[in-house]
Length: 224
Length: 220
Image 1: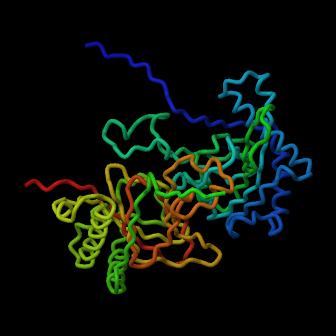
Image 2 (image 1 turned 180 degrees about the vertical axis):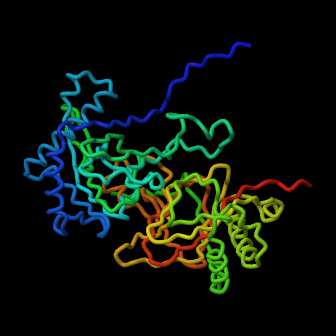
């Protein structure tokens, strides 16, 4: 009997984009210095408990007047727009009519620090920009400092020999992204994600943004 | 305005059972000593499906087959707690539950400074439980250290929040549920619920026993 040839396509797929930022070294050096200088109580997120192993700033970073922050904002939003355009049905002209809103904060994850899991309410997309990252960890610490996206949405409680070992993108397990300085990761805001424990002695510095879009005919976006 | 009369029910509710083993101090010290003595390669889970951490020891899944009295005492308490939760949450009668065979995979965890466990659930089981042998320290600067945190089963439900759904009562709240286990406490929950252990920052040890159960009818 001839073996049938199935046509297989992923359904319920989740877009995940990695966008490089050109010539980012200078930008990252300036951002790194700025964030270190502002990792103080005055700039800490008042809604999160203080954590000596992880600094989480207020979510007003994109409103700072510093030119380097303006540059970061432009780069990150351009990256998000490119990713969203690539997966949407909008024409370029239609997409250019949309208004974009974003709130961002910086995160410094120190040795043994982490960012607990959560999603990003009141937004459609999340972008993480990596300012600085520790060197690649030892193989035994493969998940040190990764951004881990939880594969909880399509989880099934029934497992047998024919569904536990599926290849990607059908496996359904958690997915990880290792932050690389000068790159942006973009994914849907509904995905629960975390930054796993940083098992190195170096800081991981990220900028995390919640992003959403509105149509020009839309009267008002809901409050954040 | 006349306020209409509304009867509030919950739908899609997730049953959680909580219990406590009274006068558990002696038992827990026996369990602790036994587990620390067997924190060795011979007893380590040889096929973990997570990234192994030196800060967290996971035993083989056959703990309740050990013959030691302390293990068998804990086995009775945990499986009875699960059976009781099943009866409370279902329409099974005690006589029916008594006829069921409870299968289990059971293991212990010893967690040290900066140990954690990634979010997971337990396919091919219906009920899970975690018992706390030793809670470990909670440093003042790390109030979220060593929590057992359950993820909200309603994925995406918190995507839109406003004043009228941000402050729902605890039973309805759109957020994960952290639980700080105390010594002698057991929590029973459906195995489909994703859960994790947040990084433990105590300088001592956090010791728990976890079990996954599935049930079958005993042939007449």
